[in-house]
Length: 477
Image (cartoon, rainbow, N blue to C red; front, side, top):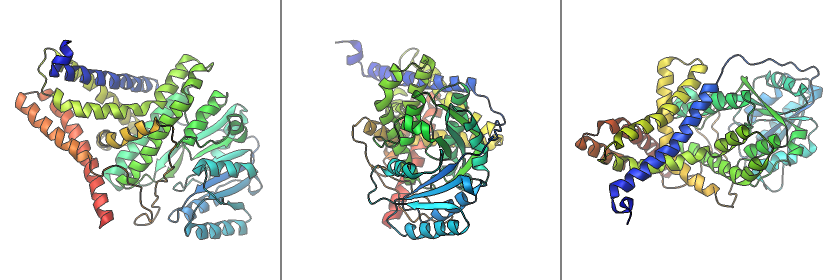
């Protein structure tokens, strides 16, 4: 029998270092993005002639934010003869009455506004956008989710990019209205900034594929049609359409200086639900388009970055496996093991820390705040690995699953809707107990180099587990 199968410490060492090595690959990729990252003022592009635009507002039971969104759309500084507003309302509660009243008020102001309703909510958001596009008057289609409040100049700042006939989509950057509400919202905002500040900007500047984020962006109708239209065989219809459109030859623009404020989920259950859908959907898109991407005529650097993007959530199962192995590895006594362990772990954690710290620095946040928020983002990412691992493996199934809307709170003191709970709330606390044992074991063995990493994982699981359990108890009360 091979030594690795007869020696438990050898098995732990092999599995642990292999997991760290895979995470290290994603760490190197993150450092590569950072090395190419450049930040500066955005390019202003005024349209020679303002084109006709249809603003699409997909809604489903959004009584707390629907009126605010419709009013913001009506306040857009754009010629009335070139603007149409479609409220794609799939609601089955009193949101319908709110929508009708707000749209009627827009019509009284001379704005071309209409409510589009379906008898059946098939295809979820993708189905609503597809139906709306069939009757849309504009050659350009602008989409806003329910919790967004675009500035009045939003359209004028983006439509000029479409003077280039090769441009199929322009994406704006998300802002975070409730960033400083709690430690949780600060961590979420930092995670999103890593995506919008570093990833989008670097991919756009390098001529690589990046994605429409489902909202705060403008599409050319022809780019949607030539890519095969909105499809609902994945939970991330925006990511799916983005890749199909770019594979069809359309160019995307990222207008990083144009910011559309939105709300991040104030509660952990809503955040888990949102992240589950995004992670599962990205795996579904990878499974759907992997072969097409590899067979395309795109340069290999574009193909490899696309695959790295679509498989990014594989890091969560790796983090979970690492979490299970780390307390055991802290007790391994093998020559040279802890040197390799320390080097690999520093690569993984440092790349993540630099990534998020750089995004906060680019946004001009002060040193103390950005260091704190970077630590919070890393801890939240670790604590989410249990629920996100479920999402990744669920995405490998051929069943699409239901599109679960993230509850919005708006200006109310609490959301009138409840997030969908999945899994066992507070299960992360079991891993926290496992890491507490690992800390005791590492301290007893004098393995001091493992203590900072054990503390980081312990805090992440305690934080997410405690928040999840507290919300679940509050619901039942």
